Image (cartoon, rainbow, N blue to C red; front, side, top):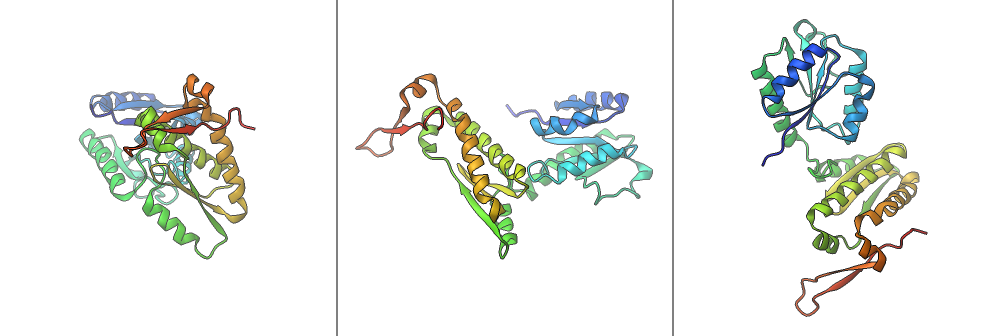
Amino acid sequence: MKPQLRITLVSTDQALAGHLSIRLQSKVYQVLSLSRLAGVLGSIYSDPPDIVIVDLAELDPEILAIVKSMKADCYFSTIPVLGLLSGPRVAEFDWQGCPLDDFVTLPVLYPELFSRISLSLQRLQRVFDNNPLTRLPGNTSIQQAIEKALGKPMAVCYVDINNFKPYNDVYGFSHGDGVLRMLARIIFNAVNESGGGFAGHIGGDDFVYLVPLERAEAVAKTVIANFTTIVADLFGEEEKTKGFYCAKRPTPRKCSTTARLPRWPPR
């Protein structure tokens, strides 16, 4: 079954938001309507939607700032943002100051709105190469980031997980995907909290991040420490007690291998 498209609707006009929500839900979209602007970014960051629709009829500075913050963030900038604009304001709108991906004029023509939503998502798939699992930029963006860093005092750092394949084989792809999403968020947060940089996902359990050279070791230590802190949650109680788990090897002569768990608690 195809998952529902998840839309976050941002509007302080409750009548407009209510009507929009009903019409969007009629297309089997899952809609979260937010009217308290102070909590919008927190909601989007904690549970990213597939698309964000913002009511810009009054050009509310707080809503404009929300859009600008999203688009300045390398992790969330890929979420399409569609603005609702009153017709007379379109000509004077500051597209650079508030980088929308698309817009629809008010009053809303719903066939047009539904088409714009569909086109925004198709455009995203064509333009961005972000990993669909972790949402981190993929190989094209990684290559561009490295090219921009050439000649500068920047460090290109590589991250992978020891014994990830046997873990994936034993616990299943669903658990493995959860580990990758968790590591992606750890890397992104470590880079972001250190002062900014670039974090990308090559594929599988291979990640890359770029930061100024003087911050590279500190970010690496943060990633390792944060992953070690929560690594025990990735295993069952029996495995944690034994300190290892067994996985099959693909070679016919040696049918099993033992993967040692990281020391817990960490020293």
